[in-house]
Length: 380
Image 1: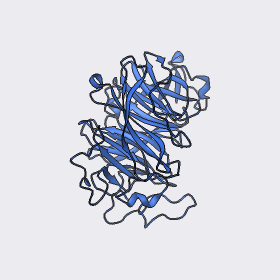
Image 2: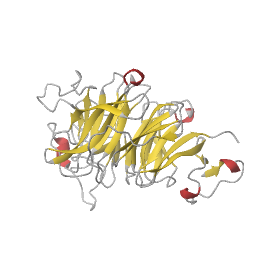
Image 3: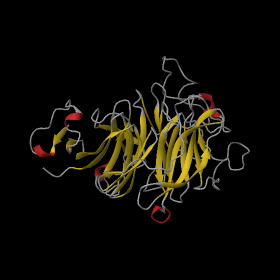
Image 4: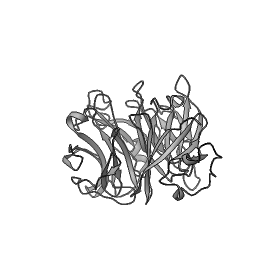
């Protein structure tokens, strides 16, 4: 339910109102625990893929077509120079961006993108520096290139989470080559863990290379397009696309096998069974799954001060049903219920982040994509 701030105190506007009619006007929505205000900070974005707040005044945005932009004090930059040549087709292009924990000192960013190499296409992790005037990128270098690139142009994964120690956890999708997700000598269908220079962390499970590629942290994933740390306890979580049904939230642990395509709660797109069922020895169960699929694209564990009612909840953006899924957890971390927010209000939601002030930022993966901010509504 939504209500124009100009009409605060009156009846809520009809849920079927077209987004175009209020795209630049703050809008009030009712959720189960708190009313929120949604502001559209930017429109006209070309399939934005990632949003990353630098501070209260500055937001980074990537557009899949290959544009890297900065929104600073309400003004959008031109696309920043300094990017390498990319493969920007279908699901490939400029994808995620993350910020060094020491950004104020080192100006370092990390981003993922797809490029052609070795007769295929694959996801790559770059390290770069953002100029102090926010106008260009410099010293852009490859720090990770996934093994065995393929000609398939989708299911790349390619999300980044920066650990407190500055190392990087990066998702790599199966690139629609399902069985490769069970091969520990292949990056497809994995979460990889690297240091900021691309070297191998000491705690990686296959660091010696005897039982798998040294970058691999966990495997048996399908297309994990969300990854995040819980700021309270440091736990790592991913959200991934299933086939027809079976989207999952997982807690990737070192050396663990998350089952794809041997076990899944989904079916193939033609309805046929995949693998052996939902359980198998030596394979992990998801923390939560959706059936039917919502096509999850990113997640956070909310820990901000603005919405104490949502403390510890998963907030998951979804493409298929154009919504944010709010998942409540009990004291043991188990998902106990779901609320769906902003359904079909802003299009296919691609990324979500918690801003420094506790508000929530999200972008929509559309030809005319938007950047929105979700804040606490004033009392009525």
